[in-house]
Length: 601
Ligand code: ADP
Ligand code: ZN
Image 1 (cartoon, rainbow, N blue to C red):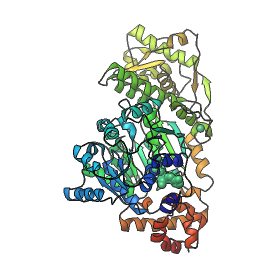
Image 2 (cartoon, protein in one colour; image 1 turned 90 degrees about the horizontal axis):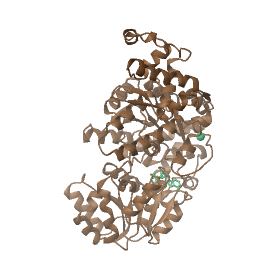
Image 3 (cartoon, rainbow, N blue to C red; image 1 turned 180 degrees about the vertical axis):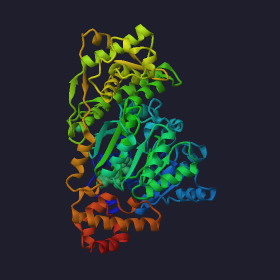
Image 4 (cartoon, helix red, strand yellow; image 1 turned 90 degrees about the vertical axis):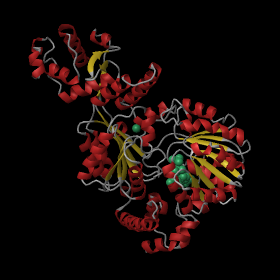
């Protein structure tokens, strides 16, 4: 408690933090499942400070270790890292420091840790604990498997007296079981937090012109704020980033095909500068500790709910309002299904992937609260949240049995009478009786199904097909995504089963208004504040940018947004009052106190 206040400047623990810290400080093992932004770091940092010796943090994210160490040093904790980015001389210095007991915390990559040389070094070091971060990486069935993690069970044998704490934000029961076993944590106490992230607004919308929709989101709600835009392919990443830059958005690209140096530079800018939008494949983001990411947008459908939740979880770690926005369409469904069908590996593997995709589609097409669905997927029950698109703007549903019968018949007739199979576009042309080259050539206008669906627009038909694909009533196969009947199509055609579909409301605009309406602000953070406070906030932000630049550290290392907001509201006028503000610890008070008071005066 004392450490929490004086070192970190916070006045109370969150959730299970106190219990976890107590357990590990007393020498016990722990398994911690907590969502991103839940506050996992303190769970090992404080015990490492309290216990004698050095805490060793195992993390797969070499590129981020330097930032993590800088953030710790900024609050006065003695920290270092050992990884392949150090030259021999630097590594020796850290090793000597370790043996001399100079550090509270040292970060290590798993591949380095399991080397005999490192194990031997640690054997001669006084150790406070081992913290295994991103512990789900040990799970072979998970979405982030890393082979080096399997070697970590060695810690239990080699260092039986040193407490171990494993932490992850991946919450499924299967991952939990697997990591407990593989890391030999059978004797650990388990702490499973609620996985809810109430400050993130979940929105899933129909894709019509994805880039324009994205641009509108950025301009109307997240102007000048940091965000991540996920795309499925490298090409789309590059095109989207270039297009956003043309539109005046400070966007960068990141994917595995870029050089190490380019990626490091992108990551550095994203972390250190304010308001950079990173357009990336899912190669980007794990362990990105940036607390003020205000939105995560998906321009392509994620492959699983686990992946989606982890990616969106990178928004709003600081607890301030943030947006998770996904646009998806018919093409996404067709494409992902095809990727699975054509993927290498066993049938079992494809079956697992299909199940993941089905769960993701069910989330997209739900008429219930998104959060209720997501949390249920992770085995947790809650009530409707009031902060997702379906809560804010409930979608209507309609009895689509007759249109669906028309559609299914069109697919059947083309196949039976002509031996032809088509993708969505041509089927819709037939239903709507819209002549095109192919239909003229094949005399489709002679079919009994020609034009029977002229009462629905092309967009409406696409939404119908998408939902039928999502529910497995239609299947799309082959390179062109040709449609065929599946599952319960027969009973529907025979009139034995009805189909209720979701009407996609015009929601983006309405939701956006509900958030920015009150203050007219185009940024979610500033929208938290009244006009006068906002001006103070902007002044503090400018000062912070200056500080960060001078020191070459990310802005939030100086002070996170949450602290700036509290400062703007409370406007303390003395050093004592300043110390009361959350996020102002002894070290930062000493370092920035006077300057902040001057900015506020
Ligand atoms: P995680 O690793 O679980 O994603 P972090 O440890 O990075 O989360 O914490 C997220 C943010 O919350 C950080 O900015 C951290 O400083 C802050 N935080 C953590 N614990 C507390 C607390 N007890 N009070 C206030 N802020 C906290
Ligand atoms: Zn909801």
